[in-house]
Length: 152
Image (cartoon, rainbow, N blue to C red; front, side):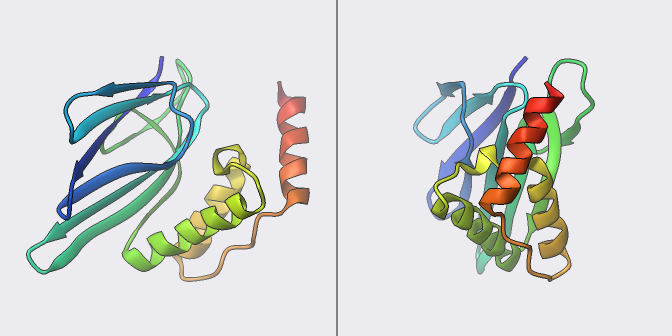
């Protein structure tokens, strides 16, 4: 079972794109619409932006984990059947803060989808209440990799 995400790009009007993640499949519907698929357990970021007559009316970012068969999930717009929500924030300032946290991880030479899921929960909780998130570092990443290896 894969998790499907509907993406759309109407320049200057509606934009839905994947900021990070490793899709295992893609279906192009037309030049503006496509559907990407993620394997169970994959972590990815979905960014949504929409403009109205007077500027931005919606900016959102969600970091999601594709679920395995039989796992509980939460429905999320444009994601089928749904996913585990690690982070879900709206408002341009919050979206920018999350994008900055993603950039820091990439600046360390790591892929954000490989970071500990708990880090994304932490980032969402802190930024959601207007506080800075603790930075992700190599020691925390190493601990996550060891913990994940033991859980298998």
